[in-house]
Image (cartoon, rainbow, N blue to C red; front, side):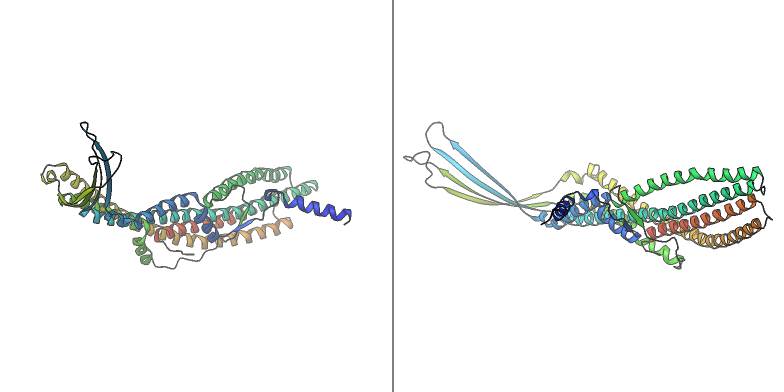
Length: 427
């Protein structure tokens, strides 16, 4: 083996043991679907709620343990001070209690499991809304940054052209200074914009549960299709929203709480079996030797009830009244949530229709601004327009581009809010 081969092998070995963090990692391409997939797996709030949901599932799976009997064992050793005889005893008690509260607890476990599931779904739905909004906000900022860079390049080109025209005596010093000021004024805007964009990207990564230094790029578009679903159909979907489903479960829980309080009026039956075994010492036998024993067992049936609860002015009656008032409040909350949801959906639909109309207007406005700039540039090249007129036309064109992008982003934002309330994807 020659020396160059040895060096190559050593170099390969050294590189193989270097940490992966020293090598550039490929950029992660994220679509909105991929962003949701990552967040549902890595987001800290989702992980926390998943633990709560799994705990509720375990409790629900073990719900019939309420009917298991209880077992109590005991033992004792007795010694008579007047003679050397002693006695030892061992006993066990097996008891099973039966009451209405056990059957009520079964239903309580079922409702608690359903509530945990609703909390889990609500976390995912809210997270989905936040991620979608931030995803398209970052897409908008990406387009805005490109437009801002174009504005800076255009302002720089106009300033350089103005310097040439000024040297040739074609424009005044005022026009030259105006072109320079336009260029220098817009430069800090780019850095300020990038600071804001970095903060939004960091927040996006936190929502996804990814490290803050993750390099990623977004894949998506601000173009959306019109919402064609009828308003009546969209408003009807609000009744299936997770928050309303959860409120219905809370109402069931309030009803169950009243039933649990009423269960105290029913007697509770306890069945018990207590076998025992006694080992006495006998005359002439060493006290430390067990020679035999005798035992017995007995069966008990106990019926218990709290008679105080039947008194009209007892605390139990007040507790039931308070529980009934809590039930009524929960029903009022359900009506309020439904009314608020219907009003919100109706308002969102109206704003979406307006935003769709605005996009048509702003699209036409951009076409006019582009044509106006083309004419101003031609007139400037032929000397029939000054530089200020060209600058004004370019500012109008860039503003029309930004306005159109902002309107598209606003439409997407409204549609995402509507999706959250109706639980249905619209684009």
